[in-house]
Length: 145
Image (tube, rainbow, N blue to C red; front, side, top):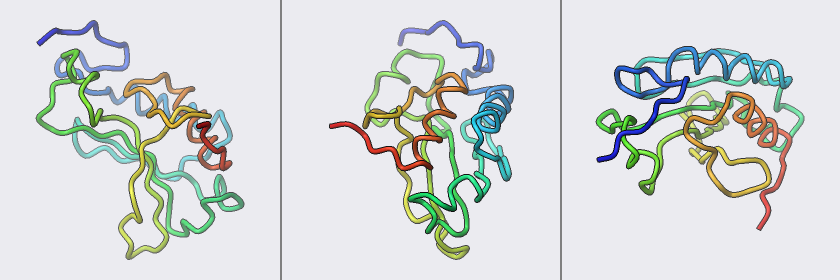
């Protein structure tokens, strides 16, 4: 397995995204006009940001009455310090999950895509790129192709 050069957003000990990365994404979302309602990180291999309803209540996701979650996750036994982590199918990283009802527990989970494409955003995309993808999502931008 080939080791990679670490991104400034990775913990040097295990390669998973740092708390600073989660914080920077939340700041970038706010700067892009997408309010953050809540953040949660329970494990080193995942974290979630709940988007403020005002950011999407008049758009195509208005039906998600109980929330819109933007999350970063990976398998707890993967190794983000290796090149294989980023080149294997089923790449971990960014996703989104609408919640239509408090009992729904999430209606489905989809990859968060680079605006204008059907390509999943890079696992450690710059916070501003993640925010741009979320803006495209809540505004209803359709992917090309």
